[in-house]
Length: 393
Ligand SMILES: *Cc1c(COP(=O)(O)O)cnc(C)c1O
Image (cartoon, rainbow, N blue to C red; front, side, top):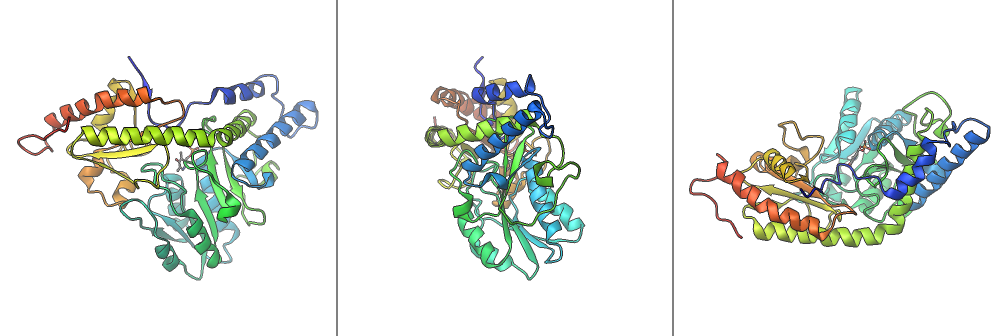
């Protein structure tokens, strides 16, 4: 049976060139980067090479890149580290209602420590309104954290404008760019961003490695204490193979960015047109054009996203119902709630995210099975209106 992976927002396959670059560091080049003999020096040099590769992808200086154990850790580090360093200045941060749980749950932990957090709403397309941000500042606002692009509905936020407003109010600006890096051009200098999170496994690199960009001069306290690694900001012996893999993945993302964007956008439009023209009572969630190149997210009325996932899995297709982190729970996705979907519509949502190795044949295969699955599930659904539904076919 054909197998088609359409869940690239959850994770991606390691690029073959990334794997080749990593292998020596899992074998002969096993030295500890803190050791002074040749094994150590070689590992250290490999890390610094990776740091430069990550830096150039987002137009940062290598000294501004701190490697972490994941995108989640980079998000935790940004919020906890900045609020910790600036606790004399104020205890208010601003974020949005549609952030990844790595941000939302860190913000909630800060609230339990006495911080005040404003969660900005979004419109029906998932956009934060810059005017709403302006109104949210208080005397003690130290940090604004708004994601670059949403992992569920793919909406790209007006980051340049949000960062500029934040500057005008004297606070620091962080963005969770885990989904945007490698998919969109990002220039931290031009955008005036102070902190940015990214992750290896979302950009065809390995799992368990990420990075936080921290603009030179930004005050931040460490999350982990121990050795002097990563400028004493992230203690612990470095994940050398992981970091080397992230570096290579960043380099490939930079070299292939234009090509990937074109390829993914073409397949995305083909998929969206195919679904909307062959299935009734379906809506596309997120913004029509301010959208990640590989993201699609639909709500199918009268069915459950979970049963859709199971049927697609039986057909060899990997997809997600809204967010990998919320699947398995009955709570509807906080993102779909924030864009104003009624519960029952949010429950019928399906995220299909395209990656570099997908082909038009993959999308054709999806389009050959999805309408029938939807039709069959609706015919069994107690939610469907009596008398059945018309199907465009
Ligand atoms: C995947 C993801 C994360 C978490 O990154 P990990 O490396 O898996 O911890 C954070 N934010 C967004 C937007 C993501 O998509």
